[in-house]
Amino acid sequence: MSLLERIAGEIRRSGPITVERYMDLALNDPQAGYYAARPRLGEAGDFITAPHVSQMFGELIGLWAAETWAALGEPARIVLAEMGPGDATMIGDVLRAARAAPAFTAAAEVWLVETSAPLREIQRSRLGETARWAQRLEDLPRDAPVILLANEVLDCLPIRQAVRVAGGWRERRIDAGPDGALVFAAGEPIEPPGEPPDSPEGAVFEWSPAVEALGRAAGALVTRAGGAALFIDYGRDGPEAADTLQALLGHTKRPPLAEPGEADLTAHADFPAFLAGARAAGANVSRIVPQGEFLRRLGVEVRADALARARPDKADVIVRQMRRLISAEGMGTLFKVTAVSSSGLIPPAMEME
Ligand SMILES: C[S@@+](CC[C@H](N)C(=O)[O-])C[C@H]1O[C@@H](n2cnc3c(N)ncnc32)[C@H](O)[C@@H]1O
Image (cartoon, rainbow, N blue to C red):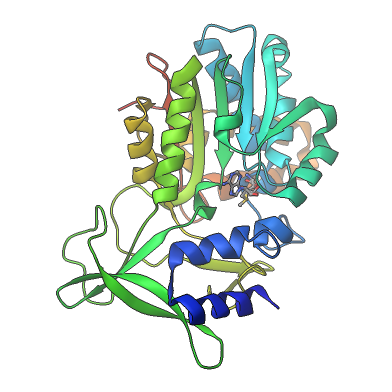
């Protein structure tokens, strides 16, 4: 039985499910969830991310990590962790760039926080003995400061949705039609947290308790033994009514309820919820910076110039890749960066609240 049929069966037995439940099943169902069973990242798969666009992305994050380590007073041991490392492209670029700071590389104990078994296998084949794995942030070592990196992880955590109707909001639920197809339905009345005022009827508002919980976990992690966490994703930096649930299969957008488990499923990252969670855990939180601005601050233009001089035959490609990462038409504005840190630590290229 397909995951779609199983979900329709659950709905027939117990009633329409929340978008949160649907997303969790579509991505994480142990037998057929997208990440649990068949994640396909990269050009030949369903989607590409910034590390696939250019090696400069991970290299500059490696520089960010080395500078954060220096700002922490160059501890002799540090946990350098990436959450949701996918096919390990970014951590590979981070570690290569970090070789420019041999004392940092020597201090770094590399950990990957990954829930997907097939992706763990790919990561293991790429990194071998140089890394260790954890299932959750809470499982990372507690006895050393930490630098945590995460790119495009918040967008695959489940969201809830509310739909505006006359006189208020209702939880958006997913029902099964007579033909077994899944359809959206308005559920029970609800007061969603932080919803924008004056939303017209039919507007959809999203929020993510899972993202807030991750913010709390990241905040607790960095305050425990010192350190910083960097989260990069596409998403919103304030309240905004929009339906951003999106499925991608072979780089093509698909209806989000059509192929649970077959297509990747994401929603815009709820940055305000993430930061609220981290603040509640006692961490310092940064302003939210557009990715283009963040990479410029870390010297992406200088890096692109150096790469182009070393490979004049590839200069055009390198400039095009850089523009894609930083321009408003590319990933420069929709994608955003935030950091949370322990008391007194201002991570590079960030302004703290
Ligand atoms: C969209 S991919 C991004 C991969 C990689 N960071 C990149 O930029 O190419 C999402 C990654 O997060 C992982 N992931 C999803 N939910 C997770 C969770 N709750 N804890 C840890 N990793 C998770 C996925 O398995 C995958 O590695």
